[in-house]
Amino acid sequence: MKKFKTVVTLVIIGLVALFAVQNAAAVELQFIVWHFSMPRALLVLVLLAVGFLLGIIVSSLSSLKSK
Image (cartoon, rainbow, N blue to C red; front, side, top):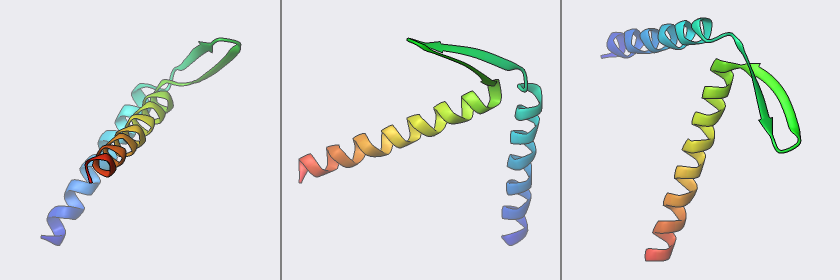
């Protein structure tokens, strides 16, 4: 089982690395008065993290209300 977890972890790391290499082009972002550029892969990962955190917060608030 330990070997399986190691192989799965290595595959996931490889896929993330491949995604980052293929999406390394800079993207310019504009939001109200802010203008900045960042790699597309970093943008996707940041948005994924923000969505994950918002999901945890909403889920926590929802479970607190039901108690």
